Image 1: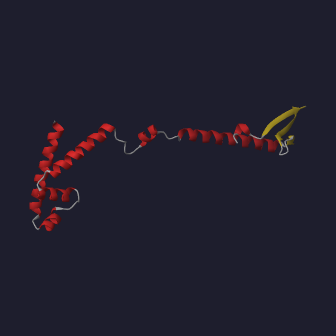
Image 2: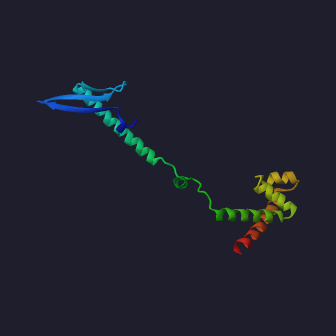
Length: 157
């Protein structure tokens, strides 16, 4: 029930400089009642109406300002959704990177993937392959330069 749909009305009448206060309502049997009340009760009802109206206006304001639209969600998002063109470019670059890595010699590819994909360090890879960390580092460095060169060819074309 909103403020405008209240089940009672308040009124005051002044007769010969004496003010009478009334609350009018329809009771549960459907009969109209006009009840005279004290000034204190009348003032309390008026304050109750004002508080109720203020609460409803505040609620309405919050409802209006809390509506969530796709546009506002995108504006507030920490990570903005990517556009179609950006998604296609990323997919093409990812495919090219995988092809370039696949074209590396087997030892370089394995070391490159262990280092960049699985986060092993030179010493761990050297221990797995029974070689020194410096030879693993050189192998990964050469593989990295080959991958960079291939990617530059694609990006500059």
